[in-house]
Length: 521
Image 1 (cartoon, rainbow, N blue to C red):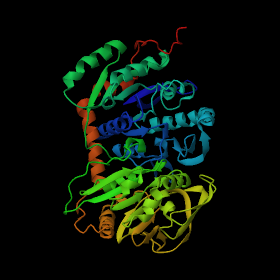
Image 2 (image 1 turned 90 degrees about the horizontal axis):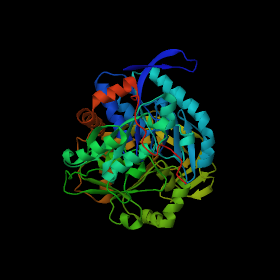
Image 3 (image 1 turned 180 degrees about the horizontal axis):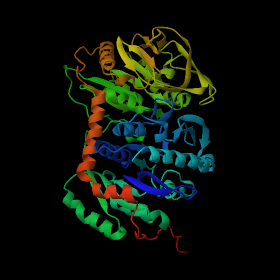
Image 4 (image 1 turned 135 degrees about the vertical axis):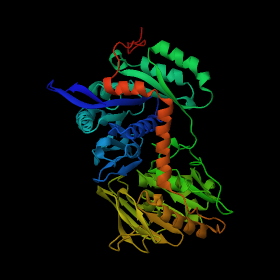
């Protein structure tokens, strides 16, 4: 799949084909559709890569070359049979507050911006985005791009680098996906196109409906009328599949005070109940999905203290604003509930820092010295340079791998390490019923996770709980990627998708009123 294009000097060149998947809303299904298309193409023997020009998420991973990208692009890379690369997500925004975000460019943090100041930086970032996409199109046969939010956010269109701004600059055909499970999908799809100006509309070539439940025949009249109204076909209706829940793009995908995953019955005669504190600026919430994949383990996000009363294990996850989220814990009463909890507690990254005695932060929140919860005898100081690392070692007697993304550094510690590095250096702390680590992904190590669950069940008095001996978390993730590939293969018009990738949006697509026209006065 190759297409012709011209560079800035007008010289004809051959580049890989590309397609942009936009969405009517955040969490409409862009990420999973891109992953499914990547898996389908990879199965077909096509050299394919994912691309998201700009992502806003606190769920991120570390690439092999020590950079940082959004987790969704790492999952899409896996669907493509590739290692994660900073080229797959050149701009990552990590919200640290309601109005500020850390900016990560090609894997490296370059400062903080407000919503208004970021607007002024977008022109220079567009240069980075387009040059990175051009590199990928030279190196791969197909690049499947993912938009951000909705392309119909007309207040942001003038400086857009991720949706129609990218599509126009790179001449990308666009498919718009809508989530029918939210309701109003036809209005969402129609309205998305109608709000775009004619030049943007010319690149929107079709629609995909996501998460449909029921008889497809009931949907057919609406699909037909949408085609008649817009001149654009619906290229597929993806059915709802309950087992698709791993690797959520953002913590907003999880319901507050909601169960994670699809708990299966225990192997023993007792459940292990896990309460994960849903911090306001939670990061890498996906760390706990490996626990939720275990039979007999019920994992729930909690936002108020009473939810800890019957929990066996409490998990404090990562945070993009450790000091602020620690203050929130105290304001809500959750801090006292965690301190009083007489069962096991695990802190991950920012949660590990909250469990300590002292945090000195002149970098992330500039809060100065903040007292931790005092459950672990360890102190932290935030450094200007962010640690980005993919280490390995052993924990609870089992080999482990993980990744680190943090500013906080241990400056004083007492007690055993939860992890031991190959040179004998301890990482994290394990002290009685409380454990903490800076490592993300630690729970994805199957043998360690089983040992950790035995440790947690022992401290919780859950003698009837038995860890399953055969849970393969990496295998479950691969199975979900295969399922996405199957859904794309079975329910999308792949002939039409191939034509878009190879030839771009068809000429002569009609303009849907008002087509970006100013309001009538």
